[in-house]
Length: 188
Image (cartoon, rainbow, N blue to C red; front, side, top):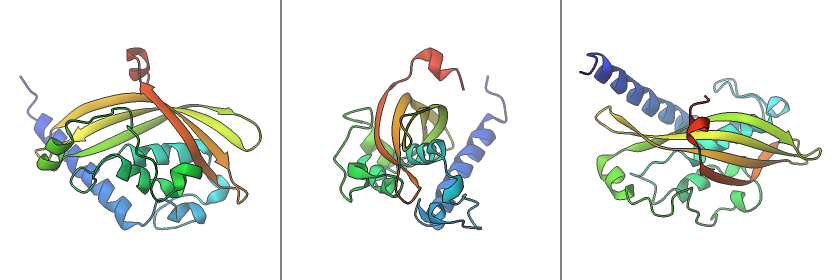
């Protein structure tokens, strides 16, 4: 038997997720707060932005999908380009799989007006020289349905390479992902 407050709890989570996405969109581009302190967003200025913060924000952006308006997960890569450099910062990044080459559910997610959210937890950071770091993180994707229900989609272990630009800002230059093992999924 389900707990009587389960539906209310799930509905509240869905509303909060939609509110967070709406606020994110209303506050401008992902890079807005990174080019200087922006008091209304609470995002730190470039002097305090770390490789972990940039990686977490970029991963959250590129693994959060809007099937109603996105043609594919690649559209999320375009949204994340302000936090990237190199090929990932290009206006038309190469089409990538984002861990699953087909996503056969895309049309049903679009029809159901579902959104896919990403919860990111940085696990460790490894400096590689004075201007490069690799950040390991777990990305948990969840499908939020309009009826308030949610469905876990996948958990990934992602390694992000981050470069410090001449401006001092850190930007994502590369990443790779693999499905997380059950032990990694339970460690957060």
